[in-house]
Image (cartoon, rainbow, N blue to C red; front, side, top):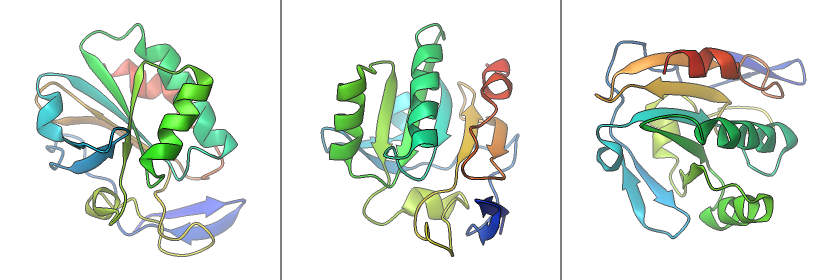
Length: 165
């Protein structure tokens, strides 16, 4: 279990992020059109998984905007923004912001992606949501970078994530 903070107060996750050098586990996440996305849908692509509690918070929204900006220049790379938000909220946010370079995926209703990757917050006011984390995967599905953001209100290290692409 990872120990992170929210406003300086300790909270915990259901486990640890997957290790660099291992293969990302397959997943089933819900797209904004309510169809299902799997890891196989992105075969042969590099992936940046921008994982966060909710698109309706300032820091989460900032990370989606920042990765949307970066994604327009990345070759053979998809940026997946993953949260427990309903697909409707993700679609509304990106539509209102004019963000077209990221792919929003929802881990509702069970949160199986978060649980499988040690991301589920297990206590505190955000219990059941995902922690803020970045996972970068190469074209073969191998994890090349991870970051568990220690203070959930802080933005991830964008440069470190993008440097491994």
